[in-house]
Length: 247
Ligand code: PXP
Image 1 (cartoon, helix red, strand yellow):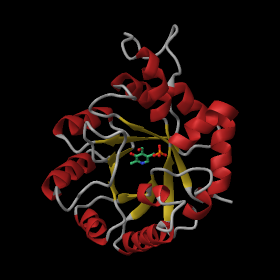
Image 2 (cartoon, rainbow, N blue to C red):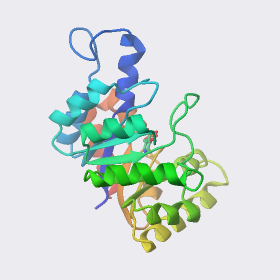
Image 3 (cartoon, helix red, strand yellow):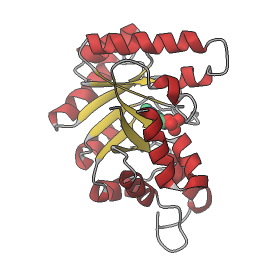
């Protein structure tokens, strides 16, 4: 069975659109509460909750992450940039997983995988510090051989293969090429001993093909589930995705 990590960032995006200046992150008129979204997701079958605490704090806030740490019953996956400040935060928080992602102020969301090859020593320091604290580390990378092989050498037990290029190409002639790239990436990652997660841009349509990728352990899905939940509620949105993932 493929596991589902529900990324709740965009629930916080909606809250921040109105309440960016509010003193509190929840309570009174301040809504929607991403922690409530997380708990409803768990009840519907989510296997874990994922949040990206961005440097610009555009959606999830530190307080959300601490509240999640105290209240969720599954596993907390913290997505973060590879910086000393975020590593220090993660060491205090002690999430179950950290997924190291690239980040820059100009990005709308994470675009392109982490360049492990280009930032080898910085990534190594981050992986080692987190692993020493018992946190399982995943590197969010493009499905390319050099990135996959170095991820394994640096001691990360997981990679999350970036499905964004495939999702963007879904309705174009490039789709087959991008899917094959992902397929080979999954096989290579498994061969070098990595556990294979995937995410970004997965929705209720492309999941039919994504789920056929070999060796998938977990998918991290956010935008499509939050969007669907506006119409169906969280429960049905999560159940429907889980059913399609494991059809
Ligand atoms: N995985 C990672 C590493 C991400 O950064 C994100 C959010 O950009 C996702 C998964 C979820 O992507 P989406 O919101 O498109 O489902």
